Image 1 (cartoon, rainbow, N blue to C red):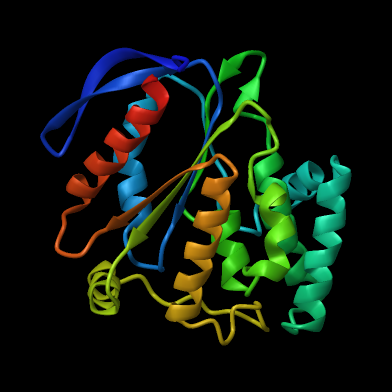
Image 2 (spheres, rainbow, N blue to C red):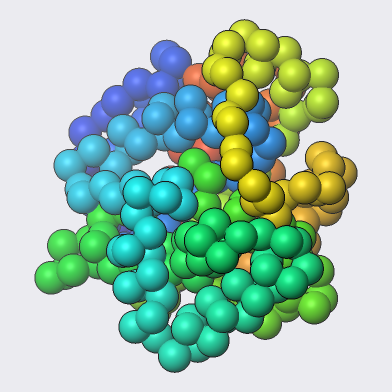
Length: 246
């Protein structure tokens, strides 16, 4: 096997010391899980592993819409996927044109972003709610969407993709949402997520994790019930290290 990274300094995640990494290939990381499960918290605890390398976050469908659309339109197969997904959102899910275009651009464009892989200075492209999460949230999972496997994987051929699914029971998720105290978002019009309950989203996550792993991605499911964020982060860090060191 080939070695991708070398050790650098150590840092602590909740008391356990691990080693930082120097990258010789770009890394793509996407966290999956229900809203409130703790994706952002765990992600922030994992990111020090890559201290010293370029970090690029892609999150939200509104602010980066022009950039996402540009990243998508530069590739013929992604342009085709964009219009297919936009048509589905408009016809099947009743999403307005603007909202549908932003969502389709995010799903098809983010994996094609190259800011973390320029001039041989490799970095990390990461998201606490990325294209896979947005796709399955609108029902884009299952055999009829199998051809989107290529779209959801990073476009940079030498990238090392990680998909981390943080899983928790409904009661745990609800308790964490109450503790977080974040007000519910006020949305105007349909988003395409209507009717997608927790079970359907879970099935979508398992479907895409299975497909993407078979395509060469590195996937991890972490059950987070009765566990502190630091403990969950340690498990994620160890998994990433095992992949990147050898």
